[in-house]
Image (tube, rainbow, N blue to C red; front, side, top):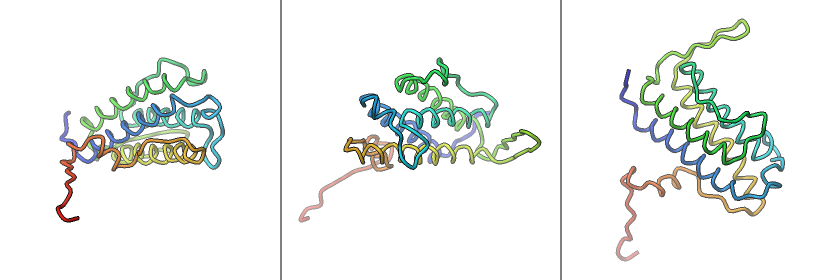
Length: 176
């Protein structure tokens, strides 16, 4: 059933895709030592953080409808960032399909080891955004602390990349 997705929810999913792509593209050019160095206070290296982030995004999709894209590699083999970037595009496309076809108030039901959990799909959509921001912040903070220039990944950077979506106009006011 095709629903009329809320435009802001669509933008959040598009923003998450854009931010992941921007950061993955930046990290593709980094030295292996930087990619595998432990990020203090985070869950591991840049490489490990992207593995965690993308696996989690696929698991979130699986919670909504029982299916998710499968990577063309084995996670245990330590996929390259280029491989993960390709998989990230698949996961993002699947999320966009879900946003268009799953009502945010649709029930999601999970069962595991003697418990059941019911909640609305919008919790999954919110988790996608929050989780992505949290881990991209870990990576960008680490890179900034090592003098590595990173793209502006906040919503203002996204707006700058897509000004027409926001009808954004910047004008110099006379006399200022």
